[in-house]
Length: 147
Image (cartoon, rainbow, N blue to C red; front, top):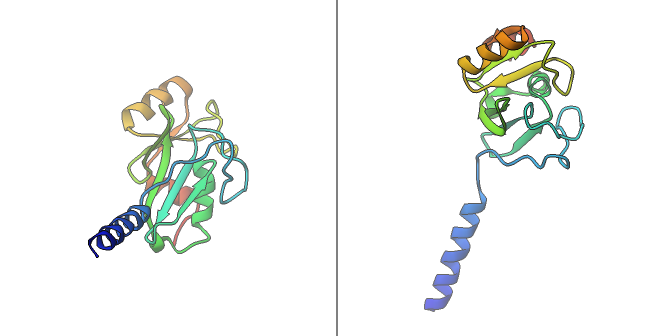
């Protein structure tokens, strides 16, 4: 009886551990973009959101995520994430990131949209490459995400 209780406890622990509602690592070079189906290879421009139910949707570029947001009920999203250009493969909260649109920094889908974890990093990139800085709300408006 005691052994079966321990086994049941371990199984419950393992099942609860498998219910991770956070971001999931992108399998670069193998995983496809949820919006355009392109293979995600660029660790500086990829994006992801996590729904309140814990499902993740990965994108090859921030612009693909923004375009997809026009097609869904955004109240189902718990977390928006973008790769930090200065730290490839590292997710940052998309709602507090600073964005640069610069013709000198290409992104996978041709919008020249790049995310940075701080205003300072984005401002430095703007100094070096030109362009225009955006906040998350400004970016949503620019891409016509209204819901």
